[in-house]
Image (cartoon, rainbow, N blue to C red; front, side, top):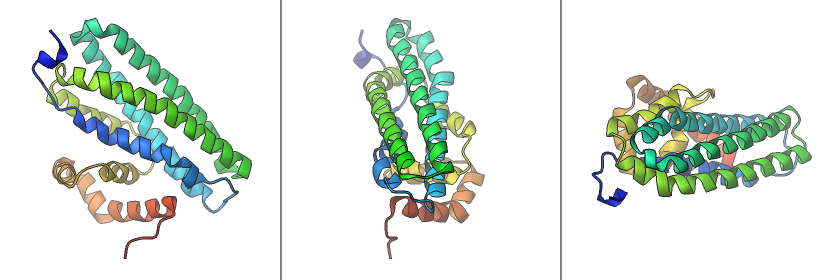
Length: 222
């Protein structure tokens, strides 16, 4: 019996939302960081990427803590795949740490050389991460869809946000919300905890718009 013939137990398509967020954030590193010394932008760039890296670490931590054990217990025949996923997480984590060190060095002294090094480290992370995400989307999402319950799957984002060590939750929320359709966003805003919704409505939305405009160098809409 193949996965295609098994009963679907949850909708895993929402995983494309954080994946899209990471791809967009890291693919745009060259434009965001630039190659010239920019002491005035260094704190902004450092804050942006430190929060994105922290959320990537938490996102993978949720899968390590919650998803892989469930899949191992319920789909033991996919052991080789799950071994590979965990190995890829370890490899990506090493690249995350390298990018974090490069980011720290740039933040302390944002020279052209360190900007170039940071952009290179972020490009390397984008490549390593995308290779993992592609296989996860192709192999893990269909497997989880017939193996994990909807409640179990839906607990992953909460675990990640609960273990997020960055200082700008509203930045991560805004980056995630950008990846959603209008319908997905409306549903999400209806179901997130009331304090989070209040934070987003009162200050988060505005703070996100201000910061992301500065990060991307865009002109705010009239």
